[in-house]
Structures are given as structure tokens and as C-alpha cells.
Length: 170
Image 1: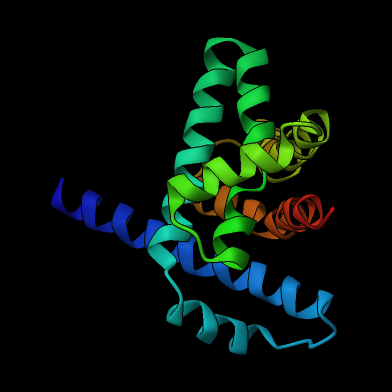
Image 2: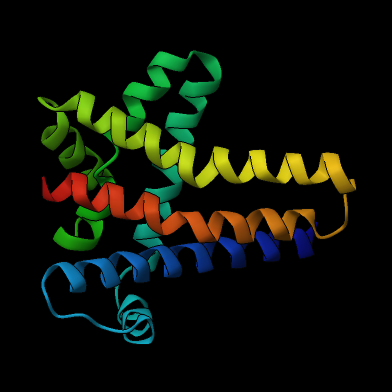
């Protein structure tokens, strides 16, 4: 249990660092001041990675609980919280302030938020999962299946992050 807890903590911390670095890389490109991933990685270590991680995890957990219980509430929550992490990164707000700001930004355009949330969920979660299931159906389950799932999600995650960032800027 201790090793699992430490590994989970490490994965969550790395998720916060990498998500933050990806947002910073996209933002630097949008501002026409393109920075390399190493530079963005360094910037992300100087910012509140824990806030990014908590905002990312909390909004995903709330929307996914809504998706599991009833699809429509999850879609609405996901849509309203779709700009939370960009608000944390760009406006440097705390988690709950960013969630409130995201709701305020998307209140009148909640359908746009739902569309971005649905696209990001499909591209970064459902598509890799479907690919993994198809691969497992062909070759069987292997000990590296969780690693493969993480790699596939890592490949598609930048598309989801770009969609959330474009939503924020719109």
C-alpha cells in the first residue's frame, strides 16, 4: 500500500508538471514567443504545479462522476469546468476561484464548453482506451498494457489541452 501510494503521488505530480508545461508551450506559441518544451518544463516547475494538478483532477473527477451517474450532468459539469486549468495557468488563480471563473466564462456559451469537453474526453480518454481494447483483443492482455494506455493518452493529451486553451481564448 505504501508503494502504491507513493507511485500514485508521483504520477499525480508528474501529471501536474506535464499538463502545466504543455499549456505553457501552447501559450508561448499563441503569443508568438515559441519556447521549447524544456523551457516550458522549467517554467512549470516554478509555478504552482499542485494547483494545476488539483484543478485538473478535481474537475475531471466531478465531471466523470456525473458521466457515470447520468450522462447529461457530467457533460454539463465538464463543459462548465472546461476552462478551469487555462484559468489556473494564465490568470494564476487558485483551484476553486478558477472553477468559478470557468463557470462565469462559459455560462453563456455552455454548449461550446460541452463540445470541447466531449472532444477532449473522446480524444484523450476514449480513443486510446478503444485502441488498447482492440490491441488486447488481438494479442491478449500483457503486463505492459497500463503503460501502453498511459503512452497512448500522452500522445492524444496535447490535442485535448489545445482544445481547452482555444476555448479559453475564444
